[in-house]
Structures are given as C-alpha cells and as structure tokens.
Image (cartoon, rainbow, N blue to C red; front, side):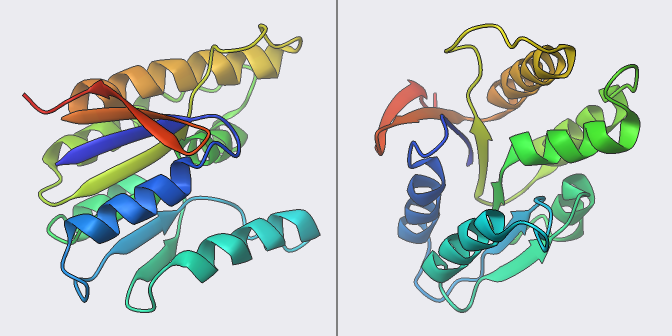
Length: 176
C-alpha cells in the first residue's frame, strides 16, 4: 500500500511514517529510507536533524541519500521504502531546474510513474502547504504552488493519505 503522510514542520510526520512502516512489516524485513536532503555539511542545525532521524531507524534499514527518488523506486520496487521528504526533493529539483522559469513537469511525472508502479509498502512524507499566509516572495509562492500540486498528484496515486498534527494522524483518505 502507498501512503502519503502530510504535516507541518515538527508535526511528527516523519516519526509517524517510521513507526507505521515498522509496524506493518516483520521486524527484520529490509526498508530503504530514501533521503533527498542535502548533506548539510555547512549547517550544524541540519546535521543535528539528520542525526536525530538516523538514530530512530533500525540498523537493518538501508539509507539512500539521493535526488533521484524515481530511479531509486524503480531500482527496487519490491523492497518497502520510506521517502522523507518530498518538500526537500522539490527544493533540490527547483534548485537544479531554476526557480524563476525552470519546469518541474518532467521530474514530477517521472516520480509519479515510479510511485504508481511501486510494488511494495511505500510511505511518502511531505509538508502540507496552504495552512498559512501566502508567501511574500516569488520563490516562496512558487514552492507552495508546486508542492501543493505535487501533494495532490501523490494523494491521487496513494491508497492512504494521512495528515499528522501534533503527532496525531488524521485519516484523509482510506483504502477502498
């Protein structure tokens, strides 16, 4: 089953996704944790965030740090996976493609195809947008618009969608 896990910053969405995939699988079953975030070598706070996330993962999980989430999903479509998070993936995609006029249509389509074809448990973690004021900058508005569209596309592909608020998951879409 594919699950989209939405939530705000520090909502508990990553921990909820980690706990959910752990509970759904046998204790020694491999999980690929796909992390599209930057290494953070120049940002001590980012390094602490990465360390906290890593410390929660079981030792038998494989962590893959990559910008090419679609290729990683296609590479092992039968191994359960957790992607954390799509907002970071989108930021890095916009960094490569251009914030002003670069199109993300192709990479989003590739990601959607890989998610749609994935054959095992998959959890996609993503920030929810639209619960605050409209961003004051053009790049902020672009990010919010693109992420909102991406989240809608992923929600259509997923059998389950949850919104995590204060560590509590609210079901938005349940399996039919």
